[in-house]
Amino acid sequence: MIDVILVKSDPIIEQSSIRAEQITKSLLKKYSAISLGWNRGSAQIASQWKNSPDLQLFNLNAPYAFQQFGKVKLMICFPIFWVWVFAKLCKYRPPVVHACDLSTVLPCYLYKLIFRRKLIFDILDRYGMTYVPKDKNFIFRVLYLLVNKVESFYANKSDVLITVSDKILLTFKKKPKDCVTIMNCPSDTIPWVSRPDITGYRLLYTGAIRQGRGLEFLCDLLTDLKDTELIVTGKVKDQELMNKVERITNIKYHGFLDRDKLLDLECSCHVMVALYDSNLQSQYEYGMANKILEAMMCGIAVITNISKDLVNETKCGIVVEYGNIHDIKKAIVKLKDNIQLRKLYGANGRRAYLEKYNWGKMEERLYSVYDKLLNKYPRDE
Image (tube, rainbow, N blue to C red; front, side, top):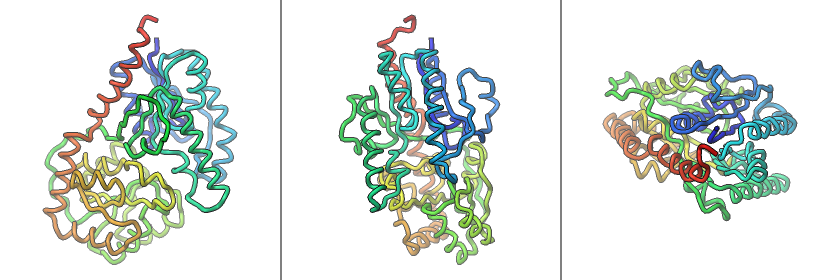
């Protein structure tokens, strides 16, 4: 008998699905589980997942929302994906179904209603806050309210609501009795040793190459900071910005890296820069950036304008104001000139990671949720 099926609308084994892959691995340690994902045509499947019955992918080429005409094409493709998911759920009849984000919850909710099973609704990002621009345009305002209302409906009707931060949880007026925060803390996959001193001064930017992530400001700053190197990695979503990056000699683009290579790169840098424009997407006011937690794991300092409570609590870096070039430059130069301070921030982050912000701690919360739900469904049912 399958205890649980997890559903995600991407391949699960890509870098952008670290959370879903971690949850899958944790579930497989203790329960009989299957993860259902959507391979839209670009997934590079790791050897550990090839031909694995624990991961089943829907192989239909489809774009992502940020691509040209992506949103229109997805409106056509998603119903096909939902039918495939629902058919899989009917085939295996798991006691618990775990829906990752709004894009997967509809077939899972129908399954819950028809078969009287339990639904976990796991929200990484509020869809309205993430994908609908913060705009005074009437259509966008209506769309924002509609998407949030639909998401709130499913959240309230779920048996357990999981979010990545307490602040996201507070955005729901109505929610189920059982709500849990499971942060996107990374697994400690690198053997921790005292790193040798890295020559020079290296900043790191990871994530999508696009406006609204501070990269445009960093480009302007790096033209003046010739003794500083910026390492950039991620998918290119703005070619004009990428062209600007390539013209600056002390910015090095390393492409889109797999998880292991990305962590190796993080460990070879001094400071992680994580900047987000909340005027474009309000989710940044509530969410928790993976890259800050990864920086803490790797023991490197951060410069950021989000997750301010976490940074101030752990004393792992410097909080700046987005778009304030003077503040950002001051923070970069301060950590360049004060080697002991940046080492202290890195050590503070690493200590906080080991004590509180690691996947082992989050895994305990996950098991607590599942043990409670599965106790109502004996394994021999």
